[in-house]
Image 1 (spheres, rainbow, N blue to C red):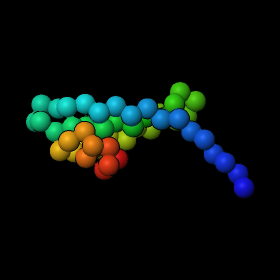
Image 2 (cartoon, helix red, strand yellow; image 1 turned 90 degrees about the vertical axis):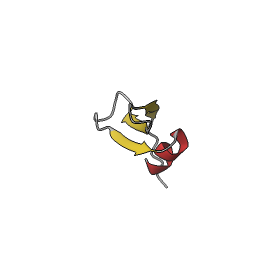
Image 3 (spheres, rainbow, N blue to C red; image 1 turned 135 degrees about the vertical axis):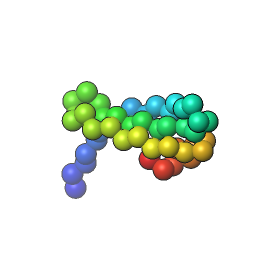
Image 4 (cartoon, rainbow, N blue to C red; image 1 turned 180 degrees about the vertical axis):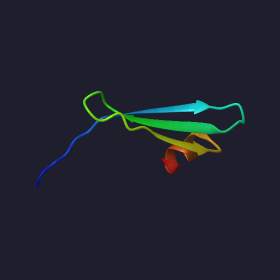
Length: 49
């Protein structure tokens, strides 16, 4: 069985509308694709992502 390990960075920020934005970015050695998801709370934004 092959194991794949990757590292991501998760940042949760509040926006001007009172929502939270979860930004998920890969580590430096991976392509620069970023995921951004909005939620009603920090936990909600992370769960959606």
